[in-house]
Amino acid sequence: MYIYQQEDWPNFLFDYKRIAQPLQQLIAKEAQLRASVNTLQPDSIMHTEADALTAELISSFAIEGAKLDGDQIRSSVLRHLGVHSAELIQTSRSSEGIAAMMLDAVKNCSRPLTKDRLLNWHRSIFPGGHKTPYNLKTGCYRATEMQVVSGAVGHFKVHFEAVPAAAVQDEMQRFLHWLNHEDAEFTVIKAAIAHLWFVTIHPFEDGNGRIARAITEMLLAQASGGSKFYSVSQEILKSKKAYYRILEQTQKGDLNVTDWILWFISCIEKALSTSDAQLAQTLNKAEFWRLHAQLPLNERQRCGLNALLDSLESISSGKWAELGRCSQDTALSDLKKLTALGLLERSRSGGRSTRYRLMLHKAAKP
Image 1: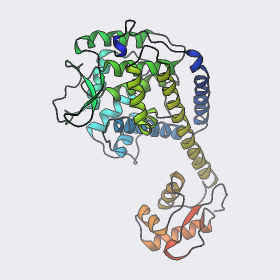
Image 2: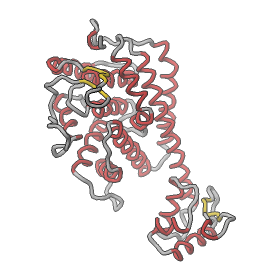
Image 3: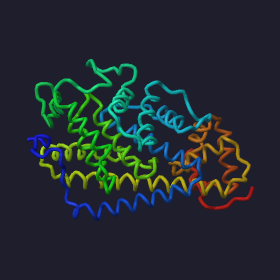
């Protein structure tokens, strides 16, 4: 028996005593992250949110085995956030549609999720007649039965059978009414239940997981005033097998969904920790440039330093030349200048193995 075949479906139950402590810890951690974000300059806040939304989209699609162009998605997200600068690249209709769907979910999170809006989201993730090995119908509920399976042809393992096609319209009407009208003391719990409920109905031929995660983003954004600075899907992708396992376990169980909610909370907690670490890096970067704002650096030198601030522990002259699209002599000249200014430290090893690392929080004189 699947969960939707239970007599009291969809009256979900959970044990608040088991959820209370991790929930309160999560709420405090999210508030701490928002407070840290608010210390950034407006431009940095926008780019931090763009990074989180980009990670969310790339990861959400990757969970389903679909690969997105990260540079195009980020440019589309920034453009939809109102950023217009030279850093944006030309994007495709696909990346624009996908970004528009996510930005609608987050920035218009207080709007009701109607059937028409939901169907538009579905069209957005399959723009231009998405190429699939089957005739996918987009922007409409499925009219066929649906199973979630794995394994080779002839050796399928059925993990879940979705709500019968004949019941999808009524089930979705009930779901959307609950989503738009049911008040929740804790948005996180509502988001967890909404995610589970939606994928259990499985209203579309494809893309159900991606839409469920967009609904999750919409609800979580409601709790933070229409902004999101962490990616839940990024953490789900890291624990993909556990994600599908807990979903299957819950969908084959009774209406007590406490274990699912606890897993969902733990996933968000990890997402907040990841974002917090990334934010610390952003703050370090901002502090670095505050200390060295008056130094006479060219754009190539700033680009190389930003690469070190973003992710590189150290850099060779060859890598510097590659990043700056310059000659080896120019790269060495840059590195010597930055070392003399006290921004970089040269390794003791010489020759081709020589590397340079940042000297953080040391004010240099121009």
